[in-house]
Amino acid sequence: GEVLLEVDGLGKHFPVTAGVLRRQVAAVKAVDGVSFTVRKGETLGLVGESGCGKTTTGRMIMRLLDPSFGRIVFEGRDITKLSQKRMRPLRRDLQMIFQDPYSSLNPRQTVGAIVGAAFRLQKIQTEQGVKKAVQELLELVGLNPEHYNRYPHEFSGGQRQRIGIARTLALRPKLIVADEPVSALDVSVQAQVVNLLEDLQDELDLTYVVIAHDLSVVRHIADRVAVMYLGKIVEIADRDDLYERPMHPYTNALLSAVPVPDPSRREGRDRIRLQGDVPSPLDPPPACRFHTRCWKAQDICKQVEPPLVELSPGHQAACHFPENTTVSATDLVAAQS
Ligand code: SF4
Image (cartoon, rainbow, N blue to C red):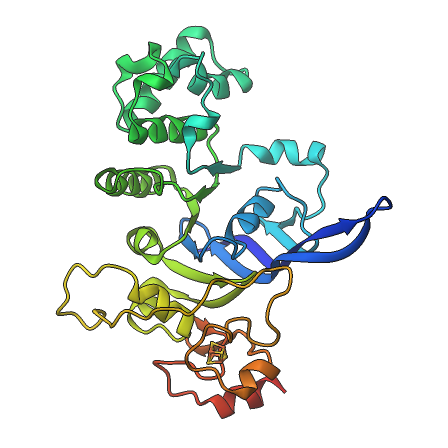
């Protein structure tokens, strides 16, 4: 399909200031040059531990946060520097779903008012029309149309997420960035909400970027997966390719932590325990940022940054000693010079 979103060398450095003059003394390199494309109708999973920059990336795409550098192109149009005023018509096209919808649902408003506000905003509906449209949406997200007059606190976590999704859909977005959409929910409810997102995607021709902290949630919904570590993408590939033939050691470590439904399958790999915590993005390790925690690290990993290169069709990884590939480390080093 055609490219809907293109992110090119995108970065966000938060300045750290000190003293009365607020001089900048350092920068938190939250996102440090990420590039990817999302085609119309597809789902990209954006995965990594907290602090890897995935949420900051999502917020920049939404233009809730101004990038420090790089470009965001939506429907062929560079929106990186559009003023908030000129972004306004695009606001409906780009929507975000949050981990905890409850905090963004006004407790004093009924579901009808919350979801209906989006329709009223468009000034295209009469009172009766709004009610009908909201009830249709409630059905679409698996809620009872009779819930129209109820308040958010009367619903379970999963139902509240459905209300949040209904409100988002009322705007008829083209791209939805879902930031940990199910991680606050009971495991038993997570699959239902993921299935709902998938059904809605087919029905409404939606494109998703789904942000998650582990690889289990996006496994079912993502067409492609990008793995982030300390502000950079370390691997990006088609879903099955990534889960079956991970090339970056960090991806391997994340995958080894995912519970396996059928342990007889090859992916039932030994648990890899990463040493230490994620280093601070204030002072990320030089060259390969993963070297302080990587069991395969050699001297070159501390001296030369491995570029993110395509090692098999559609499969990119940034590592001097990738796994599941015949491309040698020597080739890689040669490729970057
Ligand atoms: Fe590990 Fe070296 Fe690959 Fe970095 S480049 S992930 S340190 S093997």
